[in-house]
Image 1 (spheres, helix red, strand yellow):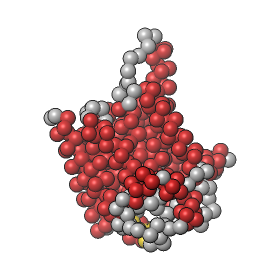
Image 2 (cartoon, rainbow, N blue to C red):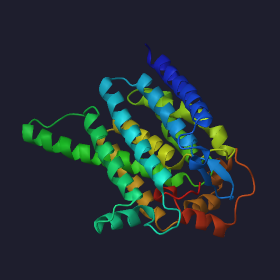
Image 3 (tube, helix red, strand yellow):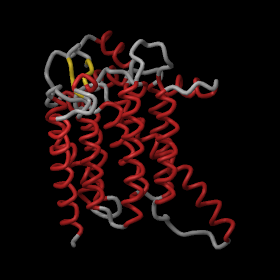
Image 4 (cartoon, one colour):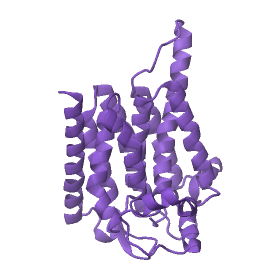
Length: 311
C-alpha cells in the first residue's frame, strides 16, 4: 500500500467512524441523554457525545494508517487514556465550583493528598502518555555506551511523555468556543498529513475526524469536552513524537508548557479577539454574536481542563 493511499484510507476511516459512533451514541446514549448535556457560553444546551465520537474516529483511522504495530500501540495508549480519563472528568465533574480549578488547582490538591476528578485525569493521562512514549520508535543515533543509551532513552521517554500529556491538556484549554479546538487540531495535523512520512497516517485520521465532527461543533449541537479534546490532543502529541527530531520535540514541549502556564493568567479568547488573523480563523463557520469581553473572560476562567461545562 502506498503512503498516499494509506493516508486517504486513514482519513476516510476516521470520517466514517466519527459519524457512525455519533449516530450510535445518539440513539442510545449511556446513562440517558441528560447525562451528556451541558450548557455552552451562550447558555444553550450542547451534547458531549461529539467528544468520544471524534476520538473514536482518530483511533480507528490512526490504526489503519499506522506504519507499524508499535506506532499503533502508542497511538492507542495515548488516545484511550486521554479520552477515558477525560470522560471520567466530564461525567463526574463537580458543577458547584467547590473543587479545585485548573491544572494548578488540581496539582495543588494532589500535593495535599486530595484526589479530584481533574487530578485523577492528570495522573491517568500522564501515565498513559509515558507508556505511549515508551512504545514509540527510537529516534536518531544512539551513544555507543550501554549505560548512556539507557539514560538517554529514559530521558526521551520522560520528555516525550510530557509532550503527549501537555498536548492533550493544551487542546483541552482551547475548547472554549465552538470549533476552536478542532480547527487547531487540523492546523497542527495538516502538514504531516500532506507531506507524508512518520506519523502521517494518524495525522490524516485527525483531519478525517475533524471533517466528521466540525459541522456539529460549529453549529453548537456538540462540544468536544474533556474526552474529545484530551483524546485528540494526546494523539497529536504522539504524532509529534514520531515526526519530529529530538531537539524539535523539546522545543515544542517548551512552547506547549509556556502556553499552558500562560493560560492560568491570560484569556486565550481575549488574545484571539485582539489578533485579526486569529480572530478570522477562530470565527470561521461559527454563529455570530459572540459574548462580551467580560463574559468571554468569565468563560475562560472555567476552562474545560477543570471539568467546566462551558465550551
